[in-house]
Amino acid sequence: MKVLFVCTGNICRSPTAEGVFRRAVEAAGLSHAIEVDSAGLTGWHEGEPPDKRAQEAARERGVELGDQRARTLRMRDFDDFDLILAMDDGHMRELQRAAPGGARAELRRFLDFAPELDDSEVPDPYQGDTEAFEEVLDLIEAGSHGLLEAVRPKSA
View 1 (cartoon, rainbow, N blue to C red):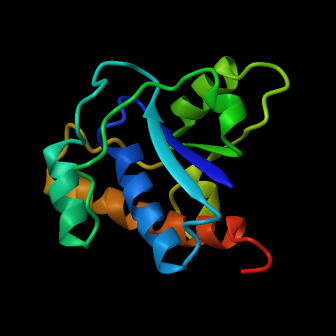
View 2: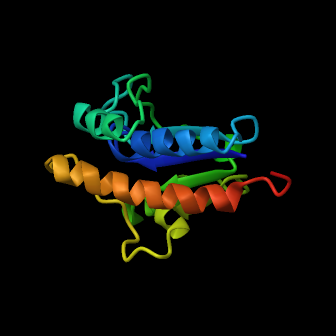
């Protein structure tokens, strides 16, 4: 199973989701069965590490994001990944527009995997303060739990 998280520039939400979900996959002993990556819809931050505020907030919760580098969504991602997860409705619309006919990847909103939440979108914390990044982490942790249960191999 290959999972790709997508946001606008791949420096806040999607790298945070990649890091949090990767940690959940590793803790479950499923690194051999589930691959995780992230990408942005734009190339504005290509090659840059995640936003320092995202890194600091994640580090406070034991998740390291510093090794990640922003990359732009590629057309081949639609066939290379099983599941591509949008952080918000705007990302979902862009993914649906960009997806080639017959693509392998299933497109979903990330928070579809956290139906217990009142939120359906992970808000962009970029213009916010520390609390905005903490809120994003809360949502991503909840979504990651549900996602792991959904993609866990049946034999695991």
